[in-house]
Image 1 (cartoon, rainbow, N blue to C red):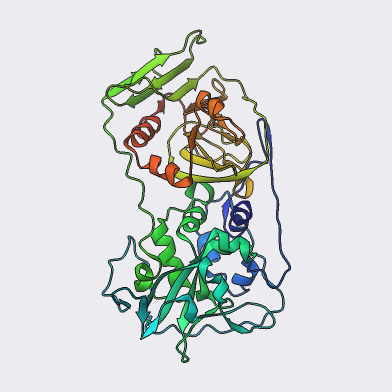
Image 2 (cartoon, rainbow, N blue to C red; image 1 turned 180 degrees about the vertical axis):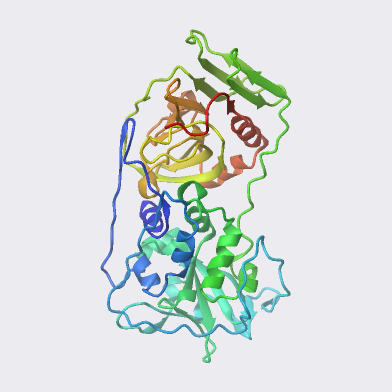
Length: 450
């Protein structure tokens, strides 16, 4: 997983990471493969395949950096044939309605298109190497693929994690592969052609992470755009790769209760039944409190005015991290801190590599880590003079080596899988806590302080 995350992050624009943040070192690594048999970003993205990258770069904020895709050297550019029955590609603002399918499925039988069964037994592959041999997918490898759909002479299939390891694919399961029906009644996946692959739904989300590159696309819009840019009929998207992930519900939860500090500077709203509990020994003119739900479960800490310029923390080996949700919040911050970003609520997860997924949420003005990896994630905002840093979050920081007990103490959530972390994002508790944190206001300051 580490390898795939790194390759993906090298292939997309992102807001540049701070060179240093308190208590951690920047971790950057770039790894390339020269093996012509490895299905890598270079193999899948020849020199002419720049449309998506250029289009995405146009949407990036001024602080973004366009990361280059390394392309293999001496391959001859092949013209892309016009896909059959494409019409004029268009990008839908929301998932397109399912058209009447042309693929059929007989009782107990596989999908077919144009009279050909949509199975891996009928798929040939042509690698983007100097040999350019067309070979059938070996029967021993069929188990590593799943056919996602087929329609109007197209087939789409994905590679399992096990298959990517067994076949030594360098990030190969970051894509769905597509094939086109040929005159010999077999599907051909030609890896030198743009239309041979698109990012998976997971990586569409990562590649359009607004907290890193300023884009605001849904996964469906991103997939439709990639289809259009690569000459794949957009109207076939659902029948080839499905509808995609369901977006998180909006954070518009009713918040009938309100809190305001004694001097009126800091205020926020919170749900009925929840309790705000000030912490003892809070410094004068500072705000330091916790918020609990009706059962007494602590959901967030708020600290303002009593924090120094750093909170420390030790850095371990960087692991892949993902931003599962994001919302900008109009709050004061110190824009002169190197590589700062505008304050935002972020729900971020770290894949520890031991089967666990750690998660935390809260306000931040820094990105988690370089190249899609992080060793320490801070949920703090770089503030102005009377509060150099402040926080409203599940906890101030998250690192991948926490035990379950340490995670619970530090406000870090522990899940058994990424799917569980996404499921929590769709829960009422999450929607309420997001609405509460994003309701924070701090009076008497501009939105940025030099």
